[in-house]
Length: 141
Image (cartoon, rainbow, N blue to C red; front, side, top):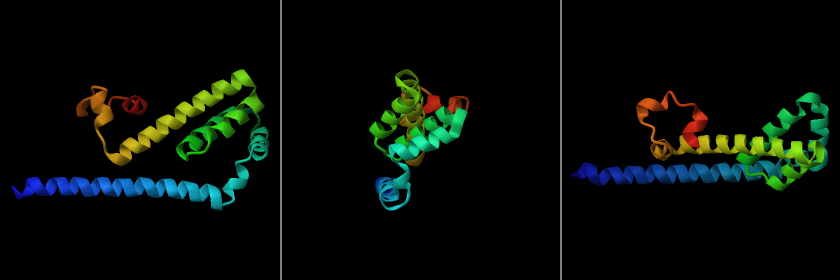
């Protein structure tokens, strides 16, 4: 009987530890953007110059920047406006959409793996045996 009372305490302590780690990640992302030189690179002029220097690879670089921005909680308005200004409304929309999907997949994958939750797999109807055959983006969507 003692084991049944100790297991919830272990789960509670793990949940608290995970919540603290998540809060530390958010605080670190905010501190990184506000108090380091990274803040200077997150202006429309700086990102525009960087993407112009990328040449033909600019759309790929932009989508990667957008995906990382989603994971670091950067405001989407800045990056979306930059995409429309540099690539035009149609291509900018496409690149924003792809970057947002990549960022959402990465953030979801990291949060599921960090939390250790099996809820996404169970809700998708995946058993532990079938999980290894499923591509990772399908496991989190």
